Image 1 (cartoon, one colour):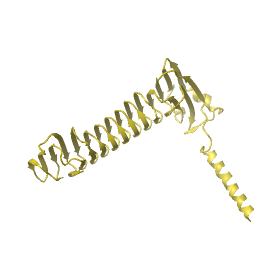
Image 2 (cartoon, one colour):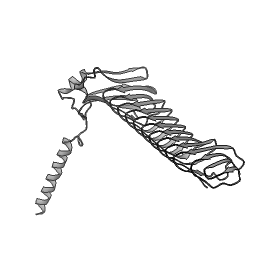
Image 3 (tube, rainbow, N blue to C red):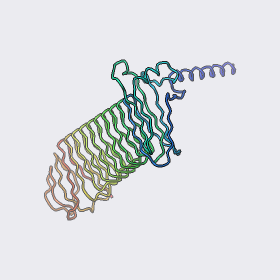
Image 4 (tube, rainbow, N blue to C red):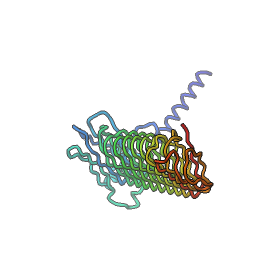
Length: 332
């Protein structure tokens, strides 16, 4: 009986593996084209695709490896598939090197409906020190591990960045922009989804008309805005400007020293200022109801308006809400 049970389990496992293979989960997709370029010094990458997404990864080798994957109906075609030749003929490909500059461009020759379900996506493996300009109109952009000066954009999907170092700009009209572990000033914008940034060192500009903005564990100045959702900011921020016409504004910050400017026409404004009880503040707060514990205050304090100074003033604090209350709390 044990032998029969074991055989049945083995058969089920084999069948499961076969099914997963048929759906593309267990086999490695093979690139149709692979180009390798040797690098003797930190370089730059100019990559774009009008036929698919672009992924950039890093390794410890002095090489840039470009892999092109031919896709049909969302699936990667085998290099031996007879359809591959026809797809390649519908695109212009430029994979080249000039000095320390690498070019990887896929451009669709025609926008005929016949080719709308086909494309070529790129996976590019680069040394860590590589400034990158990457764009896609046929899919998303995914970048991890690079160090330099960067510009990323997508009109065919979202932009996802992880562990990027250097001055960075990223924008999307085809999806959201999502970033984790940024070291350096960053500018983010999206009209196709929300913007999220977790764990950043440097100044942050983050605006969205396609969703909310969420910035967590930020160590630097912040300028954030949304017309598609709320705005949330937390971290060690000397200066925060945040505005929303699509939701509420929430901040939880420490080390305020320059300015706090919060405004919402789509909800309330809520601010937690850590180690802020003894700060000199110039207050201008207005909404249907203003909630704040005042000390050493001089000025006018009413139900819907507080204007004056705390601790003899100093740091401008402006909070206005036309869609909810203004709440200010101080914690040590």
